[in-house]
Length: 244
Image 1: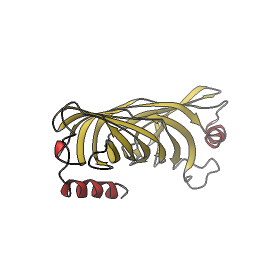
Image 2 (image 1 turned 60 degrees about the horizontal axis):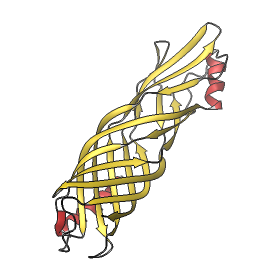
Image 3 (image 1 turned 30 degrees about the horizontal axis):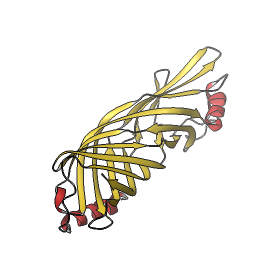
Image 4 (image 1 turned 90 degrees about the vertical axis):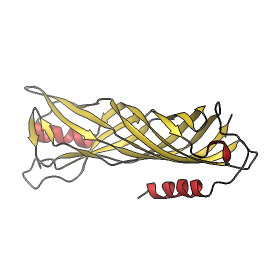
């Protein structure tokens, strides 16, 4: 639902574009800085403890916000290479459906920990209006690479592993990097017909998934919990830019 205002803005801009200076043309570079929000459309497989499925369990990935940096280089009229970068987004992670160590019903959401993710995305962008308007909508399609760092296990999760699974020490969390396709929709609106400053709104959808592993020591060695997590986030950004 949060994507609708951005999409609507882009469509209105496309339909209502007016004539202006010939600025967006081959060789133009646009840089932007903004506030970004990540809203995962998340899902996961059941967790597996040393290969044994824990039925009806799954991982949840919470929303996050950070600063975004984007750029477009028009290598030809109407066509550009776009880049999305950001200060890493920090996501809280939760697990649902874990067995109750006291024999009761399955637990609700338990805070697993948190992780930073950095989603650089490279796209080929199409500017349908190009150099004919001070309102510049665009669409893009490309590829995303996401790395995960600073993965931490919460005290709540460590206590659960100790009480329910016999952990003898702190657990460690590891998330694999992700490659996936990405699509974007955005609009640049100049502050005036002769201004190089602009306001930008954009939205991306990214195919992002990762293999998650939790390892903790026990008297019998080390136990491992594994699962695949589909994050598949919507990323929204609003900010300002400058055209060179």
